[in-house]
Length: 424
Figure 1 (cartoon, rainbow, N blue to C red):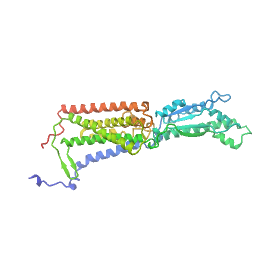
Figure 2: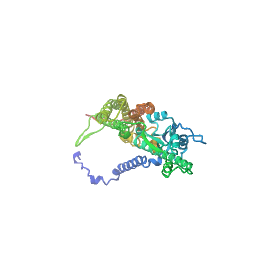
Figure 3: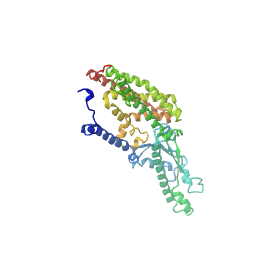
Figure 4: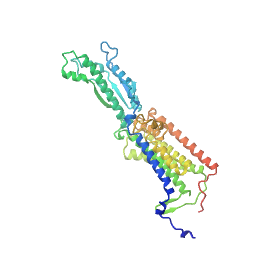
């Protein structure tokens, strides 16, 4: 029977084959389940999972201790705040005002609680005719750490300041209980005497997305490396005749070029290094020049953007070379699916379950995001995360090269050809 006489299959007939359904059904179901658990698992209840959020505590009170007491009001308040670890949500760092500002500027703390120098004197004056203003405690936010992280820190510091006010109020109320000179209005003031003032501790630009541009810029770099790596890999396979090229109704198959796996990977990685120059430059140009994203240290940002996207692209090529057809799925999990919830960019790592904190030690998106945040918001300081990011980019690049070429060399030694060459 001639080839043209072979009857064509019908969709209705093929739908009745259980084997045709099995693999797509299982993979689709697993993907839907894993994506749901991984993404929603990291953001369902940040308040419940929150623990040890680093916050600075500054006692600047220089007033003399009240009669019969060893500490002034500021020292007592700071000691009470630092000792209150019942819920474990905050990790208070007792610092000087200068140290606190330095840690705000380096993104090492999410906020700060500052007791001013005149705190004791202002409290003492409330019960006398010398009272001119309410005592204040200042909470400082750090929007460069992300809107949610800064908000969580602000909530904690405000609650701590309010508790200090109530504790001090009880002491003042008890001390003036027998005084006939204190009227009802004054007693109401004494019950909650401290005013809580909120200020920005480390301001960022208006075009910074409330501290989210670092996350989205990092995501763009990861996507540029991920998608670029896969496009290059597919394009090379098509050009060398190892994959079909189908556009609309047109189908072509190029003659197969004899080439081993190691040389193919070398070609793909070299092309990735060249093409990523364009994609990283366009990402930066679109964000900064076209959209007006606030950014300084532009030469450094460009070099960092290229190296970050290149590290991802090389990783994609190595994974594709090692795993073949399912490589794109594997690299999607490595760079995106597991990376997003463990990046610490939208939800602080202190507010996600332990599994995501574990992932954050090596997942690429967290490593790259820290560096972008340091450049965009924290004056490109190395101790703001930039130094660690450079180290992790270098480590990731070396691992991609070692893993990719080790696997292809092994396959070549074993004689595992990708495809029998097809004639022209």
